[in-house]
Amino acid sequence: ADARATAEGTKVKVDGVVARITYANGMIPSGVMLVDETGSIYVYDGDLAARCAIGDTVTVAASKTYWILETEQHNADKFGYKGCNQLENAFVIDIQNTN
Image 1 (cartoon, rainbow, N blue to C red):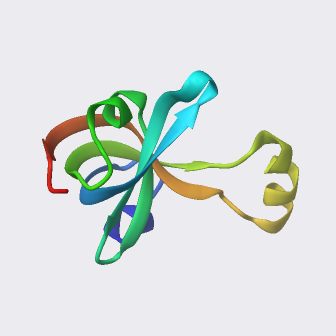
Image 2 (image 1 turned 90 degrees about the vertical axis):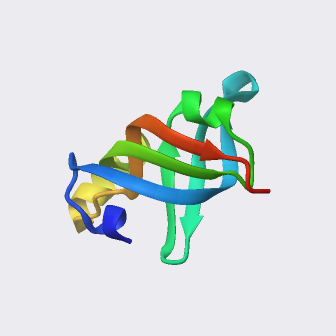
């Protein structure tokens, strides 16, 4: 929750359980969805996604940012929508297999 509430560009440290691994073209890992007792946040980082599995407990330091489809940017600007919360440029502090 703290990471989601912080300002864009802020460096944050988060702990969570990997609930989903996302893939880009060619089934290349592109990021993970982390969950904890306060909710979830997406970490856009292919290196992290390639190193962990669903159910692992992960600790990362990363930068808070927002993501929005380029085709939706006009309407987002019109209504003041910043985009989805996400973290990027993650530095992996710890990965524990806690399946």
